[in-house]
Image (cartoon, rainbow, N blue to C red):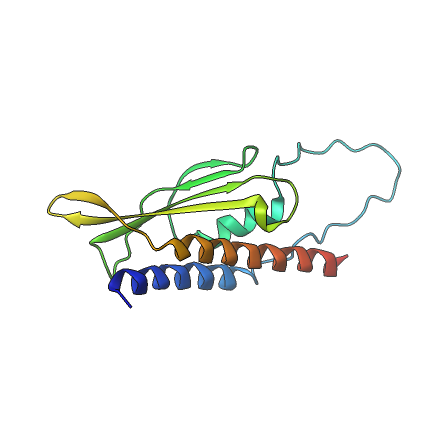
Length: 152
């Protein structure tokens, strides 16, 4: 295993652990149903699947956010360098493409750079890393959905 693969694995582990730790932080979907038949105005719904959206934010919560659009389904992080390896940094782009909770409704891209003197240079990223992040997000989204269904 190369050092790059090990570091990418550590990045994935940190993301997965962060999501797991946050999973106990509150009740999901525990609201009560209205007792009357009056029409209630609600906030506009998101343009994407809310479970995928929340799971993406929770999974990548250790990275600083650069751009967030819940109606377009775009999450772009800023560069993140682990204190353990300050000569490498990572960036993630997450695209939620649908309102349904499906695997093909999620696309992630992970980028890596290494420091060379005072400059950052693009470095190759293991193709499996993006899929591992997608799987962590999908797993968390399923957990959120199940918690909501069980709360009803």
